[in-house]
Length: 257
Length: 280
Image (cartoon, rainbow over all chains, first blue to last red; front, side):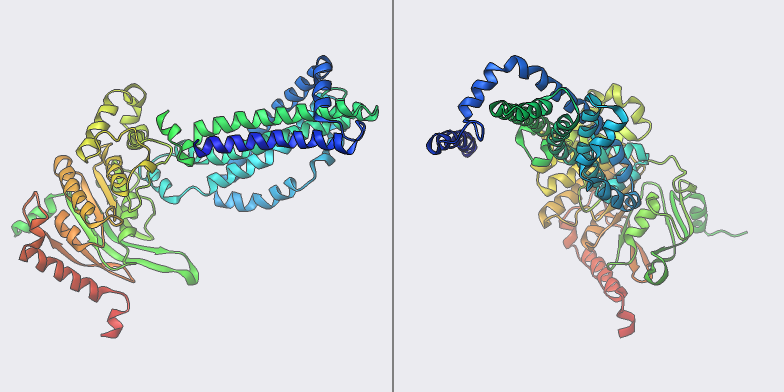
């Protein structure tokens, strides 16, 4: 068995083991459903209430992806601006740190004040949560481009735009994709926070209502849906990352393709 | 009016590259470094000049000035009779570090200048999969990289990368080729092999070459003229012509005349090191 396959088996075994231990502990210690439901109960609840959960899951996914897309647009634009020169980078960095250290939950009420409860605050919260990792990574990638690579381009009398598109942006791609994996999970966090605080749809809202009626298995079913969606998006972006920036990881799959 | 034949020739041949009383200073205030002191240099089209000298003598500064990467503090740098930067001259450049782009395979790396430099960029879209591709594969074959065009830089050795870097510097048929210690990081055998390849490329294409090097044997093997420089402030203290016939071979480097030349250069440079004159 090759080491990679063995690693995958070990990871799968750990995940399954986690749920088995959880299940057995609940039975062994007689923990009640209302405190901590067993994984099997959660799965049954998920299956039985699927028609009710499904629209909420779609709503959450939709808000997250729209917020994520807006976050990418804003993040790439701001990142390119901040990373365009050493001066811009040094000047803008303190402000960036200031903004990114604000707890984002605190701005949800402001969005609700401006746009009312519903989808828009969720989208915007997702966006601001995922925009900072993207800005910081794009800016760092651009600002740390080797001066020698730029010299090669300048000797060819390349314009600033040509240097950016041929050297700066491709070089920044590994930073960008690394940030996307973080950003997409952050976007989920943003959506769910906003849905919990101010919305009548989405998994966040579903969990809120379920917990107020002590329907604990449903709360956990919502949590499971969130976990599955988050992992799925992470996997998708990891896959794109290897395809696009395999050169940075020195992957032979990249060289073949 | 009497003209000697030599003076006659000198006025007739317009230099391709000309430095007129060029100085360059890095930094400002207390950190000022006087890298280059009033330097004059004339290079004819198709010539091969080597710049040698101790570290910090302004060799690379001259290269950057002629390329237009930095501008002179005073004096004028003329290329093809015009102020540097204004001239429509194509320039190729290779450094000690191969500086290939890691996300492109060798072919696309070598293709890069054709994407940017006129007149090739005009035809880039139309010809990149046909004529340009064939031309690059032929060029790679000429430097011994046939069959490696689809490899990525991290899959190749340092010597192979430097060969590809030379191809990238030459693919757009530059009139001016700038080499900043391109063989400095290679082992002795690879280096000598690349000297032969470099000479071959120069003989077939005849760009004007400016080579910065620490290796005196390399300078004597490759160049038509060797300019010896002194450090702090940098200036050219000796300009000698190398007359060995071409194509030159490694065997020639053991010739007494060759050895005498490199020894004389060595002595000049030893005496030109900074701080040396205060000892004497």
